[in-house]
Figure (cartoon, rainbow, N blue to C red):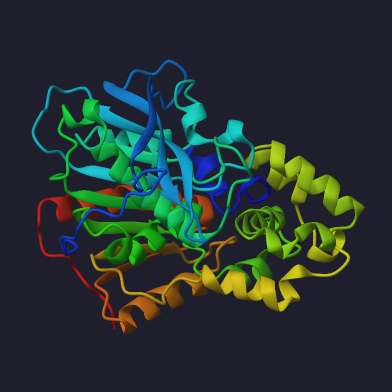
Amino acid sequence: MHRRATALGTAAALALSLGTVGAAAADPPRTAAGRPGDIVTATPTAFHPLPGQPTGTRAWHLTYHSTSAKGTPNTVSGTVIVPDDGRTGPRPLVTYAVGTVGLGDSCAPSAGFPKGTTMEANLIQQLTARGWAVAVTDYEGLGTPGDHTYTVGRAEGQAVLDAARAAERLPEAAAAGVTQDSPVGIMGYSQGGQATSWAAELHRTYAPELKVKGTATGGVPADLRKVADANNGNVGAGLILMAAIGQNAAFPELDLAKYLNDRGRRYVAFLRENCVVADVAAGLFKRISDVTVRNPLDQPDWQARLRESTLGTRTPDAPVYLYHGTADELIPYAVGKRLRADWCARDARVQWTSIPLGEHVLGAIVGAAPAADWLADRFADRPAPDNCP
């Protein structure tokens, strides 16, 4: 049953129902749209892991400026959650990236928090229970106009970093200790692992003013082509077409429509309107050839764009806690090991943790608390362990 319901972040969604500070730099240039991280709208909301469950927090739904994969200004939504504990001095801030929730706007984390239906909210509550503030991006196109740029690494990573900037610029959060002096942690699993790993790699050049202490990231789809090959015809097959929709959203010149057959067009229409459980169920064990007239992943332009989302080509400038289940059926364990090797070869400070016999869901559950403990040590300025070979 679990294998039929899990996916590149569904795993987290279903089961959880789941350093070095960057050098100071001048503020990013202001554009007509505003700086990345500037708040467009802010509205009080509520944060509930389950319907009606109290959490002792205050929350705000935001829209904020960010940057697309092509470097153009865009607007992204998200939620900032702060413990309602009377604290006013600088408190830690975690910018948290959720795993796959689907492509429909109703699937956005922010849409579910007030109702208690966002599946990773219980993990987020474990962070607020430590007294930490949490910023949760909805990612580009999820809760805002346009298709969600699902699996487009640069867009995701920038949205994660800009969520932290937005939290630090929210006056109500500042009054509760979320300021530019707050130590920042980055955390996510599965799709969220891709997003947070990209944020770690981009921090130095994109948002160096954030006081990032470390990144805890797990189940990372670091090489999209290898992940697609592993899922073609398997339980995670629906993720492949979801990822194709996401890449096409970021890069419309890829022209996904010309590769789809009638079945594929119907499937794309369904995916765009539904959330991950239905999406994965609809795609179980499909092959790319079932929904296309020819495979877009064999085309040079598609291959080039997928390579652009590959991780391990830049060095995170703060320590990383990287974890992966050895029996992960959605994101091959070898993909996680390769990311570790690539980062270690670039002299990143990496603590690698294997989760024995852990499939995707178990990796999310078992890995969450140690990842948060690791971040707590970074916030306390304890030396970061490193087990690179």
